[in-house]
Image 1 (spheres, rainbow, N blue to C red):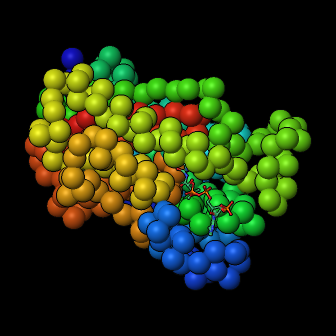
Image 2: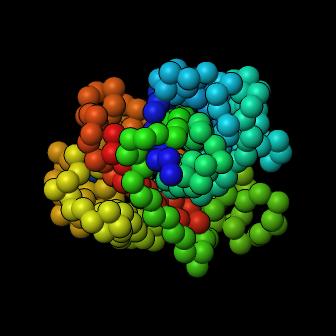
Length: 325
Ligand code: COA
């Protein structure tokens, strides 16, 4: 049986930056509150005419180059996003055409900010059962286009980004194990309406704009800390390892306080954790793959290192992946 291994990573971060001073100018907030309560200083946002598949394509091109393959070598492209260009076609099909990945099947999936872990889990199955050899997992979101800029409790949190990884069949150890989970009883803690007419949901939104994200911040925060620590412990247990064996943990970064509480619960120190939310905010499912690509570039992940990727998100969902690099 072939192992599934990440052989290339790439990211795309849009150019425009919104700093905390910008939010002081549009809602009743201040840099001190945002910094102390979230750890975020800046986020990047897409241009008005820049969409999920545009960013996904750029991240994908970089991951393919990094893997040393061509677009024709891809057997499958999967895209996780909560801000698709279209309900149909799937964004993955648009990216397939953009790349000229003529041999690849393509579909989208949605597990919100847990997307990259879900994507790796899907890719691992197809590689290990021998169906495919090269799979492109992309996560991309333009959360700025779904943000309620009248709601000070959420608008300060979100940024846009895309991250991608090529997962290939390999003789080397790669994705050792993954763990994903969901608790739909918490589904309405984080919502973005599509066709459903729901007056109650609409009323929650400060702008009354149904296309925006609404979130019960405190409830999500409480869920997130335990979900991340538990998922991370599960993959360690599955592999018979402990945190002493782990070189780096890359968590989903929604709020510094969540990450800090989660790593305390894991019993690890911050030097083992990759953090960049100060500069990017919460970029949904793109957060983990774009952080992974930065961590590799900065030499924080080296050949042979064992690392944990761990996230949580709307659904509510959670997941962790244990990899050998
Ligand atoms: N500036 C100033 N004050 C703000 C504010 C802002 N940007 N946003 C909220 N407040 C106020 C609230 O109105 C409230 O005031 P009140 O006490 O007078 O009612 C007070 O700050 C505390 O609000 P609360 O919602 O309890 O704050 P919090 O400590 O929970 O922080 C979040 C709010 C949203 C930052 C935090 O809950 C969070 O990060 N949650 C999880 C987010 C997340 O992970 N989402 C994505 C999932 S992938």
